[in-house]
Length: 94
Ligand SMILES: [Zn+2]
Image (cartoon, rainbow, N blue to C red; front, top):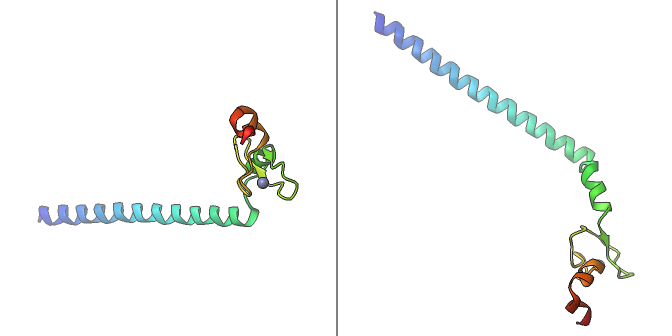
């Protein structure tokens, strides 16, 4: 009799633990999905937008693509950027 009650209690505890884990996982998934939807609706964060604006612009008149400040070459047309040419003296002679 005692073992039956113990078995039932253990089974209930295991089921409760599994339910808690599953509930937490479902809640986390819903929050993650909501975050993704908010990011898709509002666009990228303004902090990253500002960082991109402070980068280098391609010097070619028909390109002018914005590039990250550390970039050596334009990521749209491949032209060497001003800072990269100054750092690498051989690039200017090519
Ligand atoms: Zn370019």
